[in-house]
Image 1 (cartoon, rainbow, N blue to C red):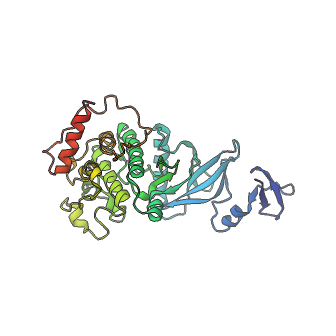
Image 2: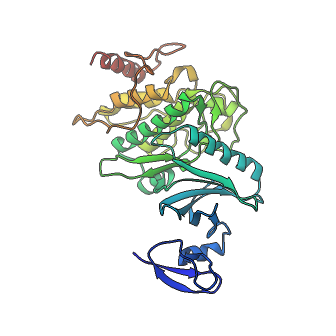
Image 3: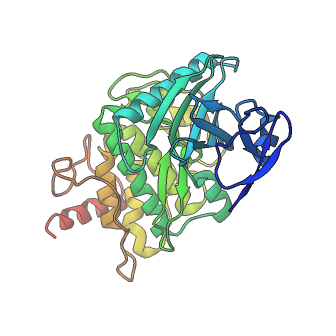
Length: 364
């Protein structure tokens, strides 16, 4: 489909199939009508970064970083661009976070992480990062539109999140601030075989280190108690967050609602309500409840361990199971048979049912 491209200097307009053409009068880059309108409100729109990456318009705004739509003028491929202007409030911290994300994406590759293309700094101080073109809606927007998700779709999304976290954990990183806002969902097919991308991995934490308490306004309802109190973070910290996300996807509600006192949650005294599902999903409920244990030693030890438990627990009355994910093969990451709890035995019948199921699955 052809587009109307306009010169922002002289107003020359033409119909052209490809971006990158220039005005025959003053050699100014021609821009689509919508991009030209957005450029009057946002100076980043309409810019060509490094002489190659054209910023077309805003797509998703997460915290203080905007994810723009763009086009690679060399290859013609759609791209996504993050920028941080030097005059923005807290620019130094945000630039450091964007730079850290670029370094991590160069080092860690996975189907659920954006593919890094390029990054740099313009002469006026604008810092930018380019990755593959991303499409979809945030998990928050999906839940707001659809409400509780069918178990098959919710578990498939959770399996992809766990696969991504497992890759980060292998590299000694803990995400630590995962929320529905920074999970991008791209629907694929009618069976809930959605693709996901984690939009913000610039703030990942070192596994096994003592961290300062996170701010109360930073996704409080999805933080493990040790993140709220400044304890040691590890893979179980992310497992807790996935448990909270699965709880919300299945019920439409956050485990602690919207009024749970910060002090009770941070002290580990507040326990989430029981996850009430149909009888055939009782073991699935036990998997989620174990992930939400206030004491980290009682949760699933690894993201991969929780993924295995979810797959084993989710069997509908018709024998339906989740579709395969892009997670790497298990190999030596998880021992066969039940995964022992550290610090005691399961405290609820549902959790004992989970361990019994895992024991049976070890023998086929």
